[in-house]
Length: 182
Image 1 (cartoon, helix red, strand yellow):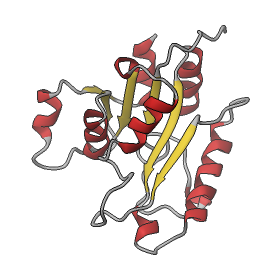
Image 2 (cartoon, rainbow, N blue to C red):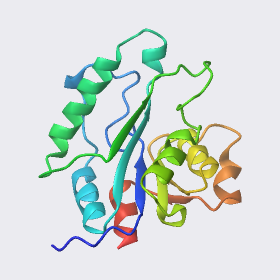
Image 3 (cartoon, rainbow, N blue to C red):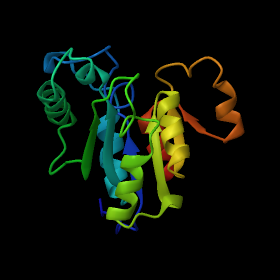
């Protein structure tokens, strides 16, 4: 297949519950399990010309439950399972803050997305934040990119109206979302 020229468009992807099955506070690479269809979705997104960024909250680091090296080992295992030639994320943001810490990069902070928009001259109208939690949706809204919910976890109670109010796109999984782009 021919790769479409990049037109400054991007997918910002959550990790747990979007690319791999969400296992609370995952620190062991042996526990990494790819969600079916993820490799195909990422490959197709590349063909469509999207830059791919990984943005993951890892509060277990901030709480001292595991190390940044543990997170990186899990990411490495995920990339092995994705198993696409020459695949890599453009950039990876691991937000180590615990949920009660001051959020610098922890979603719903838009900081990582905003920095990448500037650094890579991205067109916000062609950028999506894709995840399975309300913090992912809010990060997208806060960064003024299109939020996409993949049905992995329930939206936190009280935030159901968020989906309607902001016309959040909802898909069964990443593959179905990416197919809708082509």
